[in-house]
Length: 428
Image (cartoon, rainbow, N blue to C red; front, top):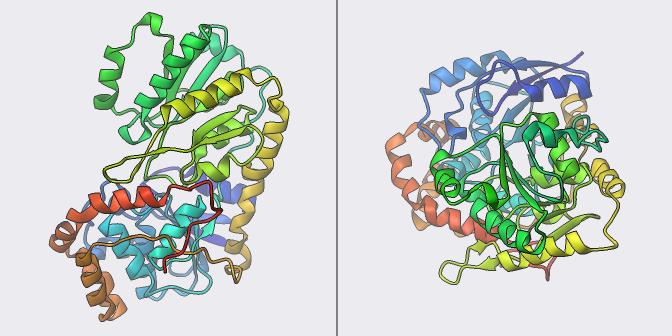
């Protein structure tokens, strides 16, 4: 049985992803907790290069490793400077966030191998990485846990467990943080309740920003019809998707590349509504999926939730006499996102297969600050090992990171997917 090395997104004593690799690919997995500072948002200064090098040493003798997070590009370079001769599969998990991520992708390109694979969750995200010189495959190898997230005839029990009323239900599941635009979701939900008085508005979350949610809670009372399910179990979350009449997100976040929550909803048979943005477009391209064009901020061109359009979509779902059967929605979604189907993307860890020729995605029209171009040009003149070592120049990183906010706005603009084209237009 082959052994695959694994560096998780953050330090852990138990990696579920490693267990999935064992279960679905029949491999042993050796987990190494490399310091995850670069994966944090915002990235934190790295510990010494010697500390990370020592942490990665157990992987050097293996033929394949999986590296998670934006820091994966750096870990790949470090492995190869130590003589690692195997293949690397990189799962960044996030869209590029700023200078440090741009730097990491640039340095990684000095160490690439034809057997390497990079997976991101959407075509717009792949276009962003292509603009930075990295060709990525589109897909979420871990998919959705179709053992837990599925049609569940017993799901109604969750109402009593979470003290939810009978009647229709509008659901949001995910992080309660500013980039997820929960304010817009609640505005839409409260207006929908004027049209459907029996509609309960439910927010389910495992990650809550207390500073963000406090003003929300102050403006809601028992009569608002809004319910919060904080830290539901995975089974309870699956039950919520099963009893919900419609799932809604108003998010235009710059972070995640794969629309996990709407995919979970669909695989449980729940119709889902989201903005036409990043991975949502591909996720919702099936029965039960509805996308709504976002508004564009007239000052900086970034996308904003169209609350009127999303409310209209929710109304249409709730009143459509010909809405798809939940069984049909779930069946299509399971074949598209079910983990039992998607884990095959990682067969390269076992058979050493490479990217398919001709699968490149055209780069997004991503503008980098001139100061970044200048520094990247200097790094290109260095030996690969010296370019990698420069990543530990913390003073320079802080200086160049001051342009991150403008870059993030450009990323969000690039993640918009206009309805009049199927893929992003390449830069000329």
